[in-house]
Image (cartoon, rainbow, N blue to C red; front, side, top):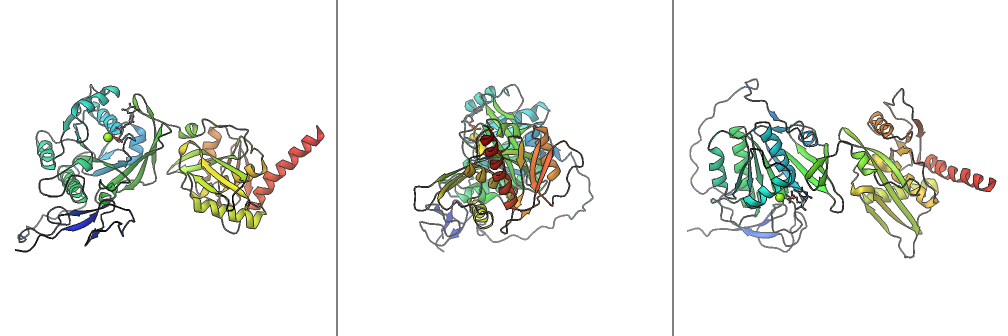
Length: 467
Ligand code: TYD
Ligand code: MG
């Protein structure tokens, strides 16, 4: 008899190794490789001789579609990130750190859908029925007709779901607790998670049910990361947020049925997650308008404008190599801006520590923040507060030129809505609004901006001297 061969699978990224190693070559994580049985499960070898295939009926693109393909929850921040509601017959993965609020938001969505007369089944593998009921009470959802089960076995779950009327939405919380009899590996391993997820996806496609899968992201490799199933599902949402702050962001990472750059903003309260319809107000909430080193960036998140404050602190260093610390932005981009400031604007920062922070724990991913960052840096170095009613956006190239960015009109509109009457923006910006009460300062290059900020210092000095 052939000896059963085992393989070694990284629990973080799913890379298969022929022998055990301390570090995974695929993702560089340590202690994530676990021995698994390759037979059975997805990607496993055939356990018996392949049977002869059965031809399936081919069909056309223009056939009838049974139900409305979308199920809207009415929670608009959630509907926005899913692209207009959960899609029937699709699988959606909601990932995020433990304790961030995945179960909470999904329980709220389940209750909202149940109130709209949809059949919703919530399968909890992590919490006992009593715990889920407690949460539902806290969320004011206890009176909704959500059907609840505490179960982790894939076969049992599928048998339960196939009974009675077809559900509209099934929530599996979480994929890490799923286990199937057909696989030998321990629950939480890559093979088990993949098998479970595959079975749930098959159920979704066959029955037209929308399936939502919850997956924890952990740094420790003991639990399979959702990354190994990302390619299998139709859409992936990540729930992010800073533990020190109350707000949470639901971000689309992948979506076969909609845009991938959408975010939904929520605030965690004692009665669950509240929608935040105007996130800019949240991120600008605790602004100290008179302190140097703060610039308001008019950013975009997907289709929606978002104003955030960029804070910089530039201070003389006592170290041989000055410190550069960044929270909420790309540190390589900060180095680039510092280099451009040194090379083209005569701003010497070699003897200064530089700290950059994006207020509220928010993370900016747009290059359009360059101009706001540069303004905050220069403002801090000069010890001079920027005008409180001014927003900044624009990309800076290595030559020091300020490049236009997309969605100028939307950024300006949001700024105006929130009471900002000035904007510093790239000179070649297209789609400028024809009307609008705001004062626009178009910058051609970064030295222009530095001269403008330094110029205001001169103006202030003159006022001082005149006093
Ligand atoms: P939970 O949804 O259980 O997180 P996850 O499923 O992602 O692990 O959320 C847990 C956290 O949310 C917990 O720290 C308590 C907090 N919370 C509130 O602040 N208010 C609430 O109404 C609820 C239900 C939870
Ligand atoms: Mg949970």
